[in-house]
Length: 384
Image (cartoon, rainbow, N blue to C red; front, top):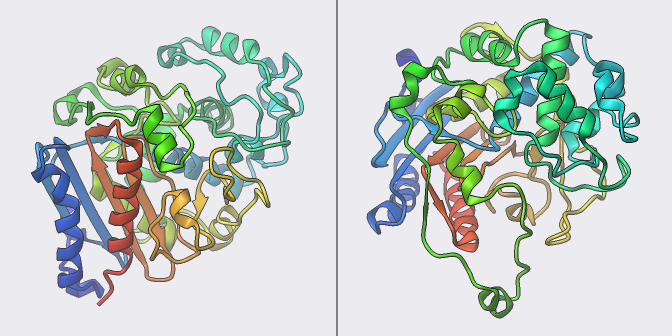
């Protein structure tokens, strides 16, 4: 768990216990109802962890797969290379990874990888192929574009982050898992933040399971909302992360393993540029990566602005709930949630950061989305 000296009382960092109680009641509800098997939630402020509560099958030492919330961690590792002048977002990917240039991909830029505008949202990659350098390059070589790079936004569940991880390895000279460990997890004091889980820690991970019943086509029609498109994030793909071999890979777009406390404290690190006297990210770096770079680009499902920074999402306008934030979050809130309802953000206006993890993946996407918005909304107003 998060280092003991970082634990403090809510009052010591300006949080209101009564408001926290309201948040925790909401968090616990689906566990008490028997829907979610295990849940953990954490709040942090002023560089300290103030709330860490576990429910159901979870305890304070439990770990969870955080799925796409991993993207912010992989991105934050790449920010260090940008900060040091070892990587530029305007570079062509093919100039760094020559094997990537095939099938007219030579125009793809590093920035487009982070923004989900690179043009290959569904490019296939089997996680265990990562361990075979030849097979890894064969995958990159085989990928084709769905549309011209930079012409539109479409979420890349895993593909673009595989490329970013390879770039990290080439420019850093070590594995991206080691880079995350040495340059982020250890300096922040987050020893249970894993991107690439050691075999010895598997017993602590709550297994992913699917719960509830999904909405039918008739339900979507009746509710007047579009049915989510079919992507690579299938039920089978989610359950694959119960495999220790896949956990060990540390899938850069979705395979991070940690607790809610590590998530909340990682975002404290992003708010303050570091922790424990270690300056990791410079203020200019953090200002740059939190700049919205996608302009007027909108998602295909709801037609809402996507508000993408460099590997993270910015809350923005009063439709921020469509981007996974609470209605009470400030416009400057930034973060990245994960499949199954994982929540992770920091709000510069209040200094609060939230981590929420669950092993139960609700098939009812509307209920899952509303749960996330409610929890974030309660968390965002916990200042005393």
